[in-house]
Length: 420
Ligand SMILES: Nc1ncnc2c1ncn2[C@@H]1O[C@H](COP(=O)(O)OP(=O)(O)O)[C@@H](O)[C@H]1O
Ligand SMILES: CC(=O)OP(=O)(O)O
Ligand SMILES: [Mg+2]
Image (cartoon, rainbow, N blue to C red; front, side, top):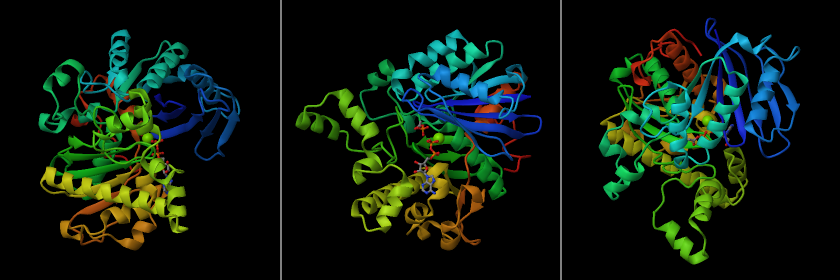
């Protein structure tokens, strides 16, 4: 059974075609610069050179057509016709309180996703266009929505309630939701395997550090708290997003500079974080290189990022009442040893003893790696995330009618009989 996983971002569409029977990736890739101009596809098939093609994608529908054309291309493709694909799994970032698990998409589900799109304006609208575009091209196969927020619906009310007028929660749904759920779920399952303990007995802190950054405190496989909030703006400092700040700052700057709520929101989402402090960069590779070259603002941005990571580790260890493992994942978490080291410095009192040399040599391509010394009471792992695999597992479980919810491990594939 071949399953297509789609992750439609504001200006990109990532995809993965997975063969469930062989448990292997048939092809994966990304269409970049969708709606922007100069769009192209980069298509990877294991054992072949990456195929790149320039092709204008003014909208997501054209991008999805391009993916399908590439997947079925006589030379670069991997399937003869699209009818070989059994189902499509779509990432949907915000599911509000309505969705505690993945669901088969129908008109009612699409309306419900639309009803919360104002809570994730950078993410949900492209997710919806992607679903509509894929349904138009593949009208006869099941389409399944997998929500970033679903995994975090297990949070207790004291973790998701803001100290704000309670009516805002009742009337507008103002509460913490949390995101990157499939990534936190996947790496925590993998960490339990590496610890050699049942997930139900583990306290794990997962640090997803990519373009978006979020941290989660996981007890017994369930999300107990997470750093992103009503929207993906709260929590850690990110490439262009501010994360936690004094809420009085936005109205103060609006008064000073005469900007509108929409303008200030755009600055906090797109011009803050590492870009805000450095004035130049969002990519940590650039920030690290320039800090090494003596740029003090790049150094400051790294110091702020690492210090804030350390504070989340401490607070989540307290929230969980102890921690068995800490996991670094996503582009930065998997590759930036310097940031990991800085974030963990001084945490020996918590039982974390880093293997400094091994940490600096660990990247995504190293695979799942323990970066603490063998006698470290708390283990720290670098675990490459695989959100698409969670999409695929959920799709299969829904098609087989064995699906309950994420935390009940409908398929133990990621947890048991799988070696990444
Ligand atoms: N070797 C590296 N060192 C530091 N940061 C890296 C490295 N490789 C990738 N990154 C960072 O990873 C980020 C992308 O992470 P990723 O998880 O792919 O993001 P997303 O899925 O949210 O688009 C880039 O912005 C870049 O800063
Ligand atoms: C929710 C979120 O921030 O997602 P991403 O990291 O893909 O931007
Ligand atoms: Mg990502």
